[in-house]
Image (cartoon, rainbow, N blue to C red; front, side):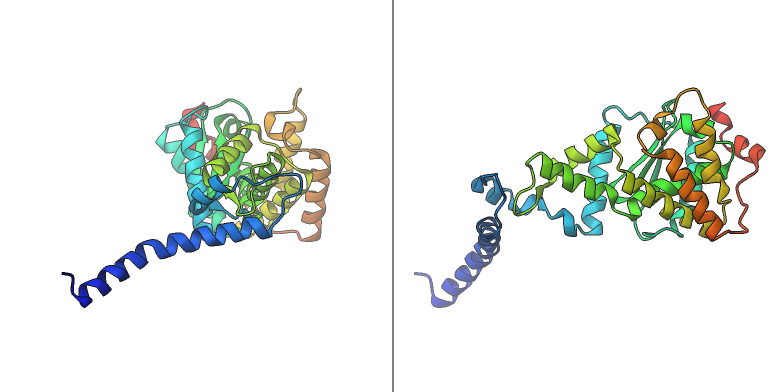
Amino acid sequence: MMNWKGFVTNYRMWRRRWFYPLISVVVALSLCLSTPLPGRTLDLLPLLLQGVQVLQLSSISPNQEVDLGKRINQQLVGSDVKLYRNAEVNRYVEQVGRRLVVNSDRPNLPYTFQVVQNDAINAFATLGGYVYVHTGLLKAADNEAELASVLAHEIGHIGGKHVVKQMQQKALESGLLTAAGLDRNAAVNIGVQLARDLPRSRQNEFDADQRGLRTLTRTGYSQSAMVSFMKKLLTKNSAPSFLSTHPGTADRITALQRSINAQPSNGNYGLNNSAYKANIRPLA
C-alpha cells in the first residue's frame, strides 16, 4: 500500500507533467475564440496541436528570427542556391560585411555573408542576418566601396525587418496566418519563396537605401559609391536582376543624392580599383 508521502510525490509529478501543456491549450483556445478573422473559419484542432510551433511575427524575438533565417538558408543552399566555395573571396566579402555590421541598425545579430555562384548581378538578404551576394555582382563592382554599398543596402533590409513584414503580409494573403500566429514550417517556406522571387516594395527599398547610406557613411566608405553603382548598372543595355526587382531606381538615385548633399562626408575609403580587383582575383 502506497504511503501518504509517496502519493503526494506522484501527484506533484503528474501535475508538472500535464499542467503546462494544459495551459498552452487553454491559451491557444482563448486566442482562437477571442480574435475573429474576417472571412475565414478557424480549424481549431491543428492549431491546438501545433500551438507550441506557431510564431507571432509582429513580436518575433531576435533568437526566433535567427532560427528562421538558419532554416531558410538550409533550404536555399540545399536547393537552387549554389555557394561559391573559394575561401579567399568568401573571407574578403565577410570582412567587408563585418566592417559594416558594427555601424548598422542591428549590430548584435550574428550576420552570415555568403557568395552565390551565379553570373547574375544580384544580392539579397533574409531573416536573422543572412546576406547573399552573387559572383556576377562582385565582378560588376569597380571597387570595394561599391560592393560595400550593396551589402549595406541588404543590411538595411535586415535593420528595417522588411522580410519579416513581407512574410506577415504573404501569410495573411495566403490565409496561413491564424489567431495564434504563423506555423514555423509555413514561415520557413514563405521565407524561401520570398528569397527566390525577390519581390520588393518601393517603401522598403527607399528605407533600405537610407539605412544603408548611413551605415556606409559611419564606416568611412565613399558615399558616392552607392550612387555610382546604381548609375553604372542603368547604363547597361538591359537592367540586371538586382535593379529590375528594385522599383523606382531613378527616384532612389535622386533621393540618395539628396541625402548625400544634405549630410556630406569626407569618407573616401574603398575607392582603390586595383586593390579590389586583387581581392576578387579568383573570379577573373
